[in-house]
Image 1: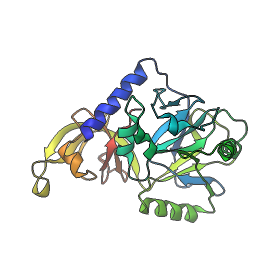
Image 2: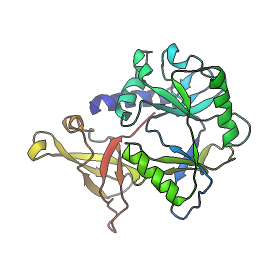
Image 3: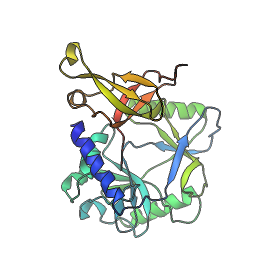
Length: 277
């Protein structure tokens, strides 16, 4: 399963490298303790695939085209909107399997496009998002929605909402500074909040499993890019992933809870093969 997933991702990398041009999009930075975000706006961080509708086509963040059927994009706006192509919580691999295909198919109808910004609109964040809401009020879509936001009342309120979302299987929270302008690149006006950190690593080797995992992959030996730090990741894998592990040389994303003095991540757990779109 994961081998098929990787091949699909590599296909999209090839597409983005052959005529496609990366889009200058606004990207979040990681929330840090001590930052006062009272009054900011928060929403669930959808664990999907970043999408950019340019008014005519749905593109990846690297400018590669997606191929949704006309039914999916019917009533999408005549102006650019950004969002997440999402199949629900804990469906990332399924979503990748759907969007990687280079021909329109009905699998897309199991997904939705959650819109979180309108890059070309005037005004601050709320005004930009209202433009999308106004459009869909007059042009309803079964496959698009404008992501709702709640004001943060306090740090405790943020922590409670994060705990609630993660208990439901969600990835985390995105914070937006009220009235903030759209600015391409990493912006301190957009913060992502998780109870854990995530990072990439390169697969060095497969370590055979024991017990219930005998005959399958037990753990991965990985290395941090640009570092001599090597360590094992033995949790976070489905049975399918253990039977078809990420190949040696693949770049994966894992979650962790800080670092030991040695530089090795604490409690690393596999998340996915790194999104390449």
